[in-house]
Amino acid sequence: MAAVKSRDTGLEIIVRRLLHASGFRFRLHRKDLPGKPDIVLPKYRTVILVHGCFWHQHPECKYSSIPATRQDYWQAKLNRNVLRDQKNTLELTALGWKVFIIWECEIKDKMTFSEKIHQLLSLRH
View 1 (cartoon, rainbow, N blue to C red):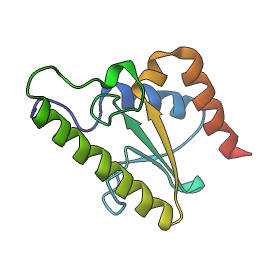
View 2 (cartoon, rainbow, N blue to C red; view 1 turned 90 degrees about the vertical axis):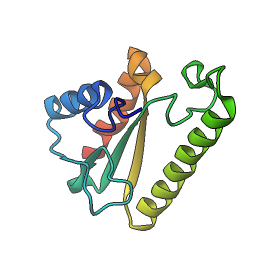
View 3 (cartoon, one colour; view 1 turned 135 degrees about the horizontal axis):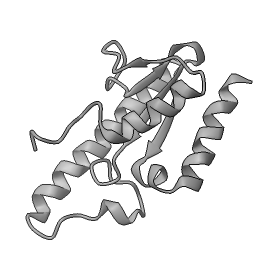
View 4 (cartoon, one colour; view 1 turned 90 degrees about the horizontal axis):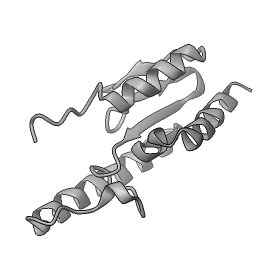
């Protein structure tokens, strides 16, 4: 699992390129915020979390199924990830940040991804 990247993933880079092309300026992985969010838009007091469906257990997503081997291990590990995500989201919200989650499957589905980006673009108005 050491080979699994936690930052600068392909999904993050896709989102960052689109944000930059749309005129957004952002910071990456700010250590002073809970969970070191993937993308931080300080001007809009918004953080963007780019979640892989498997690692963050996107509910009802075909990409979030538990592997057939070592199911106890995987269930415990992935549950810890979900609990950590919930804790970080609550802390960020309590600090006055808007939390925007983009899921892997939404990036793969161009129509859903387009809708998500429109929601982000509406931050500017």
